Length: 99
Image (cartoon, rainbow, N blue to C red; front, top):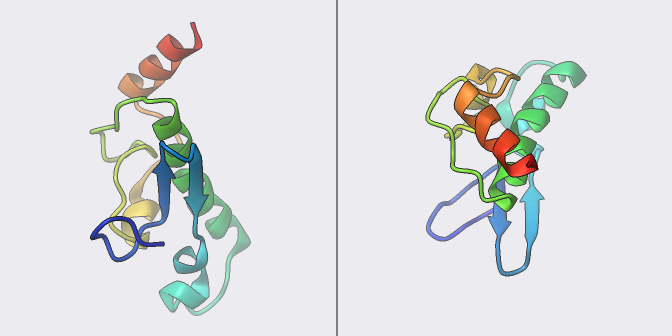
């Protein structure tokens, strides 16, 4: 996926089209040149990258905590560094949206 002048992105959200796209090729063993494919690893990576696609659509501000799955990813290694848990600030913003 390409967005603006960014050559590769994992996901993008287009407010006008109200659509999110997610590409998983670069998260796979083939895309990262890892020696073997791991379904649990792929599922974690995809889950972490679905968070930004979803929360952007809700207008929730991007997380500054690097462990938050809603923080920016600059590659697969960065995605792997994220946790599967929202930071307190992101969780609070999501709770506020629910009300």
